[in-house]
Length: 176
Image (cartoon, rainbow, N blue to C red):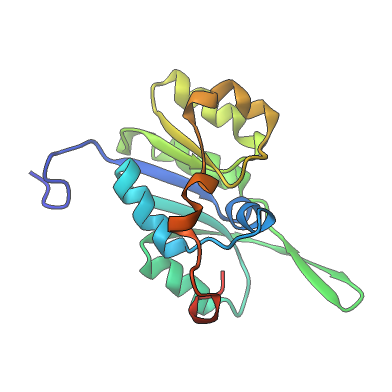
């Protein structure tokens, strides 16, 4: 018997589009506490491993350490630096990596939790559902791709858990 899973409940894995999650909650007017979210995934969906797909930006070492300490397995994506006058923005598309890892790991988990409202994941969600490997699709707000509406019974809006998962005191919080 597994000491971390005393009832031998099958373990699930989460595949998280960090930018979609982070920007989606901010768009809704709140900031996600990634540490609380990791516990939420473990407690609510029995997520043993949570793969967080994130763009790598030099200088964000403390953020990456915080996320790893919170229990995430970080999968880094190189980003493009886009300069517009004085302003610098970063673009890193993690979609292919997320789909690839979900498929590489498919025999290691009972069910998958996909965290994104991006319609680019439709083919993955469709495949997982047909293979009886889809546990949940967690979307960052109530506005998500209409392509995913076909899987409404699997969709959970994180906004329903906003009070439990938001950063309570931003002055004392880690920057995400």
